[in-house]
Image (cartoon, one colour):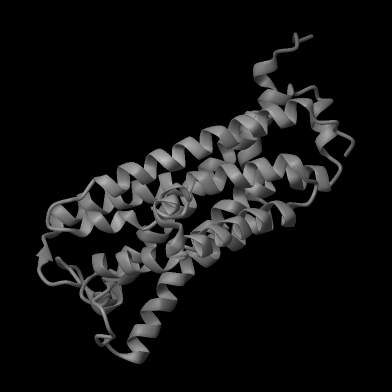
Length: 276
């Protein structure tokens, strides 16, 4: 008879397969992978975008595949990617509690800390795939629709493809870091409630509140401490010379918030009375 080994309980492979088979996983990735093609079709039907006020990414969205990918990321950062990340991280524990299967997992027996860690690793992995899949599919759709070429900046000038690919990697990396606070908030709510919808909706709702507060200019420099204030700082990578200040501040704020929220989530789950 094989001796009990805590390291063999709830393998990552098993949890990853369980989460992949969930309908919400397939729907979320389906939306993210279809959206770029929908946008390409919209531009093809509507024609090239014309200037509308201050220069922005939509004005040059059809200039090349890289321009299109940047535009797709810009329109998705504030809501769609937030929902996707909150869905994977907010549903992971709350859904088990809602199905009354959480206590059976713990009775396997899987130590609480290991169960939470395994679920967090898988949830974050799917969140990373979600954030990365959008710009990758946008590059494919943009190449098919608008061809390959240098990045045209809204304010004028171009960035060569060789440089732009490195900039794109920086932009996607920063987008991942900025979504870390969303993941942590959703995960904390997931271990606090038995309702997956409450965990996901709560995280998205608090992000919306943060965006509303960020629009209140009367708050002055206090807005810099809001987790969403620096969400679009990746656009500083589109300058002729990359401006790192905003991204550095945004990364520090996001990582700090995430570290605290993850720590609270583990502490909350360790002492929680699991009855479902």
